Length: 370
Image (cartoon, rainbow, N blue to C red; front, side, top):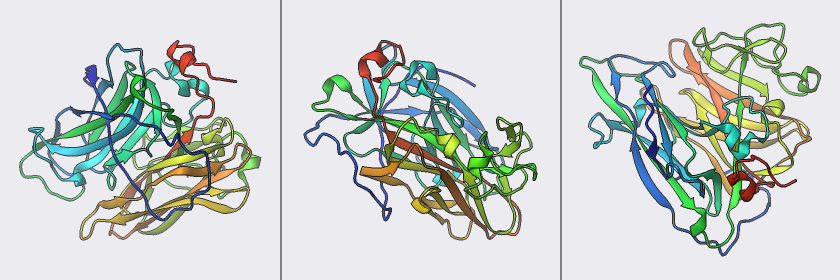
């Protein structure tokens, strides 16, 4: 794994047809210039068929402005597949994922809580969506010199390889320097919700609060797609977030209240989904009200395996989430192939940070307004 400290910046995205609720709007008079910089990931050698999560991979360290202690705002991220020369674009069908993670979470404002899944995860780009643009006036606050890990992986689901070839990921980072902002940015932080399968039929609810979890659907029992992809919850019960999908339709439920661990009532302003081919939809449900919060739908590539479109959610007004409500995620896969496939289902929620304190953050205390 090679790690080079490099400059990074900007990005883009959209959605249609999701329910929206009123919420606090950004500063209407805000004005800023978005800076953009490209970064080429490591060369990845494709010499055969590689299923999801099992292809060649690499990681580099990136920073918006190395050694800078100034405040910046990440407003977007993009990742596209390139040929080995780094100049000509390749097919997005070779995209497994690109993850952008904080490397020193304790030095970031998101360190306030324990992240059960994907600690420090800012973005995941995968098949069906190659870029994210947060709504205007919203951003992820970050010390511009803080290193981030850009982890990339390729796959090859469809094509026999007679001669090996190289691929690279071209990453585009977008950010705004706080000193150049006219007006006030709306700070966001991220939380991840993950659909799971239970390995042991004796416990199909993830987390400590089994009694509270009973309000939601239980995880299906299944097998991990890779035997090493198994972990235990606080009670020692085994689960996997990367599972096998048999032929046909599968609906899987997971209570995610403990995963989200909301610090207060807030609003969602962007949702990014990471799923695999054959996923038809991914939904967040409010167990307290019995209502659907948001449902994202996916489109498959015709005549081969792959995703042509992964829906996302974005809104200036935002969708409300409540600290005292229970939530579950529901994934629907329809495996129309003639063999087993592998699956994941993740939502990254970009939430309004109601207690962001820029001065405390830049001083490195990790504290926020009370």
